[in-house]
Image 1 (tube, one colour):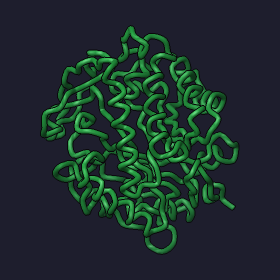
Image 2 (tube, helix red, strand yellow):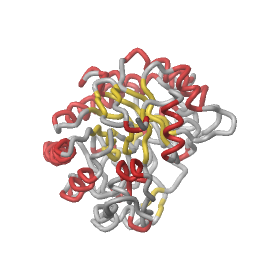
Image 3 (tube, one colour):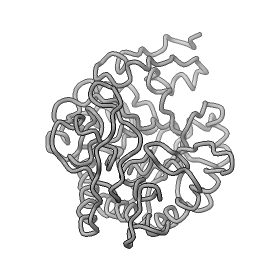
Length: 358
């Protein structure tokens, strides 16, 4: 049997195959950051994946940084996501919600409401971020969080996890990558704190671990995963010495009984990222980044990962699982339509005709 189509269990998550849909921001939420009809259809179309990880979803108003990203902090948002979860489950799929707080990666015009821009330290994101018209602009200056505020922020993540489960999600994934709030605490370029939440790599990992612990307490650790991207410079992260940053984090997270770690392997020339994770993380691994079907099979067969996530390949191939099984060619997405907020380039990619396509 093809190893990609073997079932696997990650904590409480029982997957029918090892093909995971990676989280991808697509800017399709409606007014009040609600998931609408096209989001229901988008995820339903891709439910043959062993697991879907949703786009990043903000746990609070202050967590929003991009245009038309969905939330999970209001009753209406919970009901919107319930329609998504129900549609995926009706197709026999499994789905977890990625919880993403942007921290300092904020353009105020993307929000449409007033809310604090917060970060570990008062250092702006050096990278511009697209505004509502798609043109990149400078981000807003954040204020440094007071230590006394951190328990309430962790509680927001825990409530988001509860809300996700109330919406019918099978679990949650904490976004600890790509320069967002949790990564900002981990990284020495964005965390210049001198209290117990900054300084050493172990101290910088304390808040991320506290958030994971709060989420695990809320819904059970076996329904919580987390995503990391060691060495990724995105959104102003210092890529130097990622092992020094992430080894303490992995070791500290080991005791929480979590479902998996989702690893974006940056293919660093001087670091075997998956080997480092395997040496210091005792749970399941989902591997990601520019993998093809054959390289995915090799990772599974070698025991280096228990699941493989695909991102771009799922954009234009809602039937990616069937195409991989058939050895069929993959359609290519129209990148100009990634973030338009419309149905075009989102739910109008067709499944392949019967049999392999050329």
